[in-house]
Length: 216
Image (tube, rainbow, N blue to C red; front, side, top):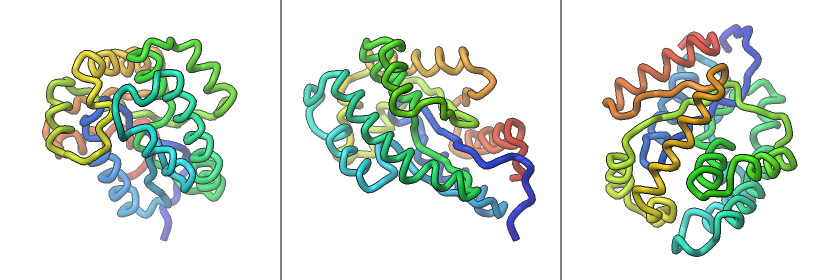
């Protein structure tokens, strides 16, 4: 039996530097919500739809110089448009919660802050592609980029294009996420991700319960 929930289902987003633990923690929250009998799906960016997953490979693999920042931004927003139209909005309309590993704040932090495009340009593209739609809650997993890059290196795989941009780039990304979170406290919660996986998981669950009123 589905839980009686007065909160209309919305989008919950995990953000943070590469290697912050978004994948692990988004899966844990997904499992917790399923166990509590909430209708919920787990998705990711770049990706989350057939078309967006095809674009993902172009963005996250290959040499760091493969694209400049504006090209990255346009590719990501092409993928985001597909993700939003094909996955996020249809599920929300059906009354299903959506958890996403990354959303628009990643473009603000990566291309806007670290890439130097600036927030104004990112917001102009965002307005055209996404409009007024916003996540209900964004959980920013904050971690020392030195540690996060070590985690990302241990993870391995070919999706390391942004990690290859180095520590200084990831530090700027971190600063971007913290700036965004501090500017929007009503929709953002910063989580200390330097702690154990279990501690971070418990902190996230408590934040979701407090901010969204979910019984987990």
